[in-house]
Image (cartoon, rainbow, N blue to C red):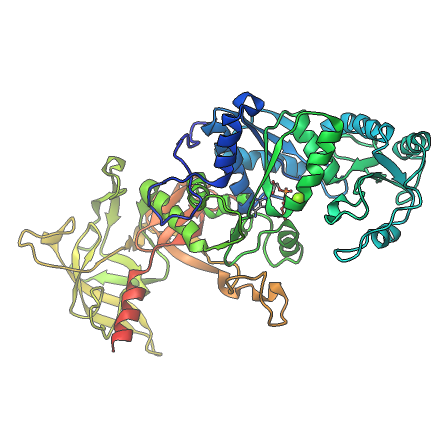
Length: 582
Ligand code: ATP
Ligand code: MG
């Protein structure tokens, strides 16, 4: 395990918990099943899991859930966890995805015991297919795809046997060999398991094992002209790797009888398949197909667009691995589909960033505040705490001068009730610097405020006075002559509806993309310490939110900041309450 991975062996819950609520018994159904197997001495009590992505796209937060589950189970039980690429579909898979997936798993804080590719087992799978043919349990079918579908029947109608079902073993072996050698055209034949065409479970109606695909494979090149189907490859690979618990998502529940059938007929090590519900999140989509559509249509800038739910994008957005792990741990595993509120994910993110992010001052929508009683040209260096949550983070010097930028939104000419920030005649603390009071408001010809003139109290240096007089409002600021200009990208949720997968207003799901999910703000003013930042450095802009240095578009001396997540907006809440009250 890499250093920052959680080794926390707490029991996990079947039921979601309140944020911050301690873990409690009972153990979830996955752990109960494993406990039971160990008590029965199955596999000598050992636990070996795997995470089996198909390298046909980037991982998303749904995969993170599966990764956390599989790797933490191995940790908890002192077992092992493999990373296996399910690379059985040569036309959709690429090395680029293989590399990115490994990188993302490591970033999440996990390291695999064994690294495998389903393609490592192509020969072994073929040999086992030959064994099933010899045992009279598989046959080559020459029906067309349409005919196969038609013969299969449906839920209410049993299927019919293919006219090729009773081919001799010799014929089947010869045809399978021809399929393998590329002597037959794509679609001319398939290998099928011989089970039961009237089985109530459609997956058991002579499922396909191999199809002909004369495609180049990113690892095996042109060595193979036939490729195994998921159902034929997956369980056997689990078995070959010695997997004890094959954990997958609920849609494979009806595949389990087939999974077990192959293993039993081959007489090889039997892993146990356990299914859990896929993670679904509000305001996003979690399917590689849809994510690919978003990328291809240009609605997002790429797989790593910070609004995407991919691990790439979450990284670029400023998410921490610890927050993703805490979220996955918290929601636990369930047997029923539930959509989780993305607000819960953001809760865990804020909780982590609050502890770890350095505070900095940045003004996103600046207006100038001129201190009219400041000594011309004087620069004061004030000490500002780096993280009030963590005194060991120390302080830094921030230059203060007679001209500072403050947020336009921190000034109201007609102050509402309970407004403690800037307003004419109201004393306010400039964070860690001085108390100031606005006395004059300068406007342009259209009545827009362009400058505030204020006086200051020299005795309030550092942010308090000896007389202990009460100043309720504290705002952030940046010295105008020292400010660094930067572009800031305010990201929000990609979709404007909770469940873009399920809107039946006739519109396309992509029409629900929120056009305000990205707002680019140029000319933001940052305190000078932010001139030198590292890509992916995370900071809290005080009173504004958590931000990260964009690793793609930042240049030396010209950082671009992405908003990771806003702070909880306490004024907006209070304002709403006050409006509600009257
Ligand atoms: P998608 O539908 O997004 O393409 P997939 O299931 O086809 O997902 P795979 O690469 O085959 O993607 O998945 C690898 C593993 O991750 C599988 O075990 C799968 O069950 C699991 N997984 C995929 N999506 C989710 C999800 N939303 N929640 C939990 N586990 C998931
Ligand atoms: Mg899949």
